Image (cartoon, rainbow, N blue to C red; front, side, top):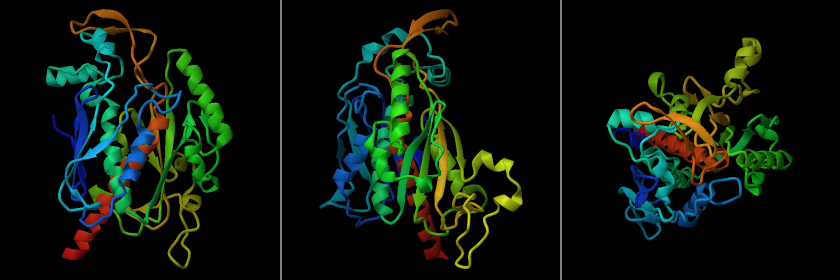
Length: 356
């Protein structure tokens, strides 16, 4: 299986399955001498871990990260950083009923067709549990990018949508509620709606908005390595993501160019920021902001029709512990992938400047 590595210089390779012994990763290319706050890394993992509230999967995992290399006396050594997160609360029997059948909208069928074999326990490698390794690496990237501030939050659940621009929001409110929406009143409505959906045995999708501030001018390369293209790849690599838009996004098509153009100020900043902080694939010093759309979780705790390995139609029902809405736990994943992209492009810039 290919495709387990992300990045070109600040490079992460992940390993492990949802119901295996452990998941983990190797982070290569991280510069030496960075003082690491390991408690901050664990705090990021805690934001993603299951069982943290009544509106997420109740799988009880401590998600404690263990570092095996690349860190000495609290600093990075410049060598590969190896780490693992042991799985301690697998209930593989919850998946025995789908051993010979496929869950609609899951990777079950295509994995079986491509590889001739699949780990049906929680989806194996296709499980979103893999993203915990990304959060660890992203937490390290955040500490490398100490001046850049990255904040993601839930801006929509189903039809409940935050209608305030991010500039009017208090990012300190993001962690004040289990939905991770910075609007407290809307967060209550979102939480109640997710609980209602869960009682129905159903699921619902949502949108996460991410804002990166203090990004310097010059990150990103023209043509095929545009910064927004890499951010799009990073977000679309996250489980359940169905869409990515940055800056004005799809709403920009309704505007005339005279209104959409970001007019310059004398210092090079712009009066508006419909470009989303990126022009020509290169960061322009303004805030980078984008939306990531997540589909409803595919596993339903209600009866549904599917097919088995012989193509016969069968009736089955989801079992086990699943998220009725994935976006609250996906917030730190979006931040982590953003940090990995920005760290990679920062190092690429240094390499170009050194060799130029």
